[in-house]
Image 1 (cartoon, rainbow, N blue to C red):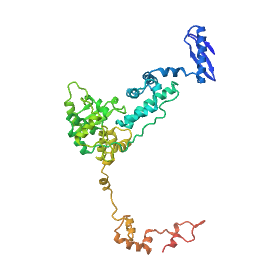
Image 2: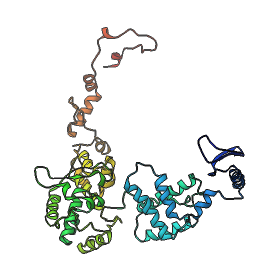
Image 3: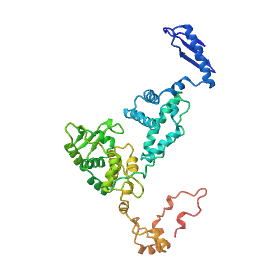
Image 4: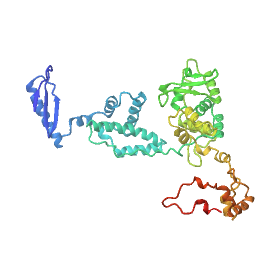
Length: 421
């Protein structure tokens, strides 16, 4: 053990080694006697910690600290400095909600059993697996950071697994008839809200944040200029307007209160109100396959309308503002609404099938000089012509003898043309 004071520093430090592990820690005192006394206590404490007799000081302090303080420390020190403000808010709000619902106040209160019980209760209440996974992710990251900082030995939620999210057939799009009935049945404001959502594909958060200054209704190219701060990919973008969306935006802006900056001045419908509107319109929330409707179904409906209207995939991807075309084509397009039989009928058919002719005992269609199938009634005659050799002789061109090389090695002793009639 060495107690010393660095050049230009007024307080002492101690440097020591236990079981090959090096320690260099400040003592924070100016008196050498006090520094030596503190150093002996520190070395004894570290030896007890390594022997398992005493819990590490940082773990003792963490066990007594409120979870809210530890969470704020993680947000300040553990998150990357370039993460978005929205990400910081989610990292604070989602774990805080779990702490409150489970009555967790200290790190010792955190339990995998209680979290599973909370998640099961919320699942019964209607929260989707993805939403519940979004609560687990920042909570696991926070506890993992505490393990890395040696504040706790193990992550108490290490045994909790994310729920399986089924994307293919869980949600569906509105049909055109359902959407028309739905919009006509609700009050005028919500009807225009739903129309804009269905014919722009804007997400709920983007609709909430949309300002009047971002909407251009006049001119040859009516559009919405999306601010980067309000879009999911933080890139913004320009969205041209469908005539129905344009008419609804005109009504909304014309009827907005004076001084209102938001396009949707009464807010955006929550899920409870959305379900009531479905019931009012007589639209089933779930179809016979068990796929449900939700507010985000308007975005899926927009993608399905684009695909079923033969809009090119590249344009559809651009209008949906997807980074990957597979999202547009596979996840957001409702394949059950696509007209497959009608599209398949456009594929050309063979006039006569060689396979069906063979199965019926008839000869297959003959191949003409142009390479097309001829009528099956003349096929048997063509076959007889081929059998007597005339067809084969006509098809194979004779090679002049002078063009052939001399025989060598294992070449046949009879020229190829010698076997022809």
